[in-house]
Length: 361
Image (tube, rainbow, N blue to C red; front, side):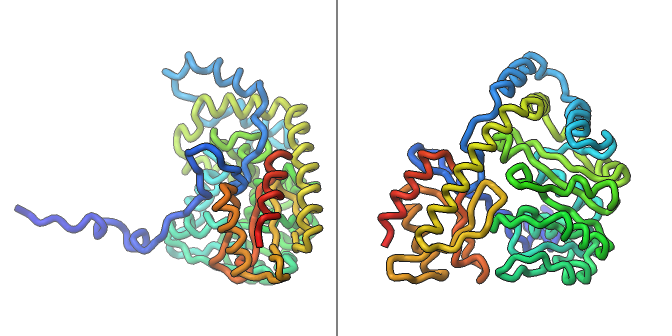
């Protein structure tokens, strides 16, 4: 009988050497205060449930392959042409499409550090060379370094995760004037910021903007995202898009959420108010907090002895976890190791957080 090779040996070598992306913990038991994955503390628009229920009897039918009704609505909402919009199974899917189009073993892709840690994973899947451009603590956009990186495609989160820092359209335009590759501005948190880069699309054909319904629209569980770009880039992405990448229920729910802007503005305003009070509370404790334009804060805690640093950050993370409060700690890099990222919950959740902070030594 023929001896078969080990299963792992059948896989591509670069896949065997990869580590998978690790998302934030999703506890299944009750009792946790969950402030670790930047989910919206409020439910989606009531119109979402109505729209989804209306589709249940049609589940025997395939969904619209290119989510055309949602594309049209988003084009109208953003003031662009329908040919400038592509829909994804979460914004991660749109990012993955861009990887398929622009990344291969002979190309390089760049990202800023710190940033969304999924980028290196997707770049690794394509066996593409990863180029990292570090931020300084002041979080100024490193235009010179990005422009000189030589990357085929570069990923910039604005507002940044995990710091919450936003980059002005002026600085992004200055980068686009010098950078010759595809610049992807990941605007997952744009609805919590005073400015976004959509107005730059008409001038810069190498700009791609990715968005998600997971954060401000409270639809993390449906997985709906989209990209805005030139018609040429969208056409290329459509060639590598999975045939039915967004199911019938997700299309209906996202469209209903988008059309209910009154509800969206109401819940976003509540989050912004709680965000402001959270920043004030943490700063009143003597903690450094980055100015944030997202639905989370990035803060450097100080203990009762006036100490700060990686050991202190990890100590508070463990204390919160012990008391069933989930936040994020990124201890693998010197920039982030002293900080915690805390999602903005509802007011009751934040008050409970403060009470547990008071117990920390």
